[in-house]
Image 1 (spheres, rainbow, N blue to C red):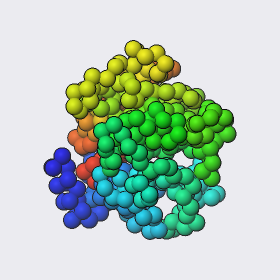
Image 2: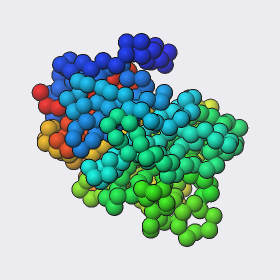
Image 3: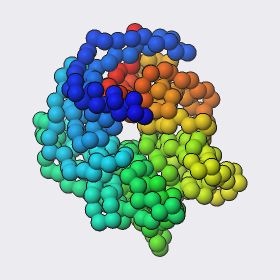
Image 4: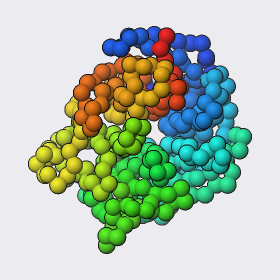
Length: 375
């Protein structure tokens, strides 16, 4: 971990550096893959979004937003971002593009917002005008921002928080448990939940708990620990998520409206203090993960492969792994996993996105933006 922060400091001292032209080839089960390093020196990059014209927006946890041109050889700072709490895992988090971006220019981002009781995730909607965010509005925020857990922890960790548009144009936001454990099962808070909202921040029509007393109407699923990845299967609209378990027990889940995924009542992992949590299959009211990993893989985001740049991956699910410095490629049949491959990257993969052409873009904790294609 110390070496990781040393690398971040070194990258910050060097400054941003587009390095188009630096490439390596790695072997995979489906043939060689070319990995181009497009940009170095990003300051703790967290979220990545590809614009319709091929440009990319990158959030930096310390409070920066970068606009990378489609060729990957020019980087500009985007100004006008919100004030954020920069502690622990807090700061600027994910970024997403409105499905109607071509006509409305809107982007959405999550960040750690200060407030009474501590910090919590907020969702900002803004319009990208050149390299400036304008028409800014916070459309949704976690309230209350923190709670009191059994360990008495008011930590700066486990924010989540990934953004994803579903086929209906509604916005899903994943929220971590803030290392407070019990709020994940509390229907009166969004902590430890996945919420579904409109682009104005209202609870999405048809949410499963909209009419149930004691439940926040925006809650879509509950019982999550730290879900940092969301993806939609483009073939059927199914939503998938990855989340960090405690010590082991990282999960891949298919997200069903109204489902409870069990944390902290069940887990395939153990607590850092050695606590042996009951397994999911001991309490059938909780949804079983589709796949889980012990030892941990430390998953970041995930993406379904589409496009033609790497034909053998079509329909596969790609997971960024910080624990294994790799991309985990999964073959999917329905909601089942039929094959699994580690593709070594050599750096902690913080985010992963696939553009319409099928080029795979990743952010790494070393401060790099990389692109994967066929040689």
